[in-house]
Image 1 (tube, rainbow, N blue to C red):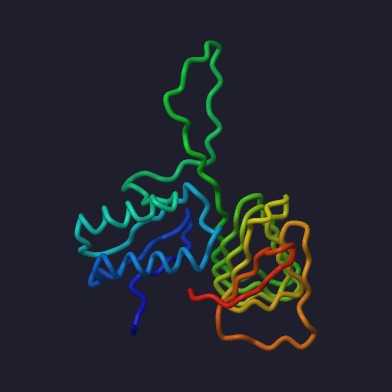
Image 2: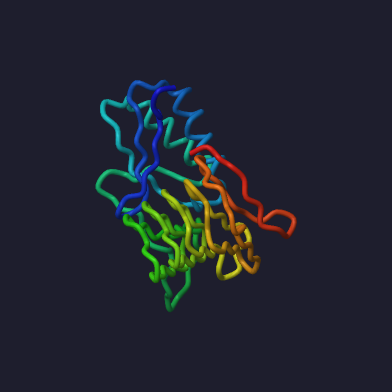
Length: 212
């Protein structure tokens, strides 16, 4: 395939889902499933995607929305923005609630390289569209996705989330941490030309190649 039919990009307010209008629904479904399976745990339940496409059939848009909703995700409705974390409202006279409101988890999106000496800290997941240079530090309560090379220190699940993952186009960190587990890179790490994911399995941090 000469080009991606589906592309997920970080935007100022969240994620953008770019769809090739020439793709069939079967191709779109296969591509979306592949990308979600390659990044398990990174898109928290309640995440909304801004759909960017030209001349996409309404039935295909509906199919994409239904597919995303199967994974607890959805499409941002035109003119509406995803609401922050739902906290509910206190009333002096409580009344029965027919249906509990979903919790929409937040994500920090950074559209530049993190230089040495800089520290990014967030209780949410973090998406960085750029590199993480040596001496930089990223701390996230959720997962970390780096659309570039990671050579700094990264700590996902910093407040105890053992399901958090760390993804990078080239994962070459000085130190990698998930929850309370720590792993260090070898002194002579070879540069890889493929994306990798780090996650916890059987009490250890495992790093494996993935497809973007």
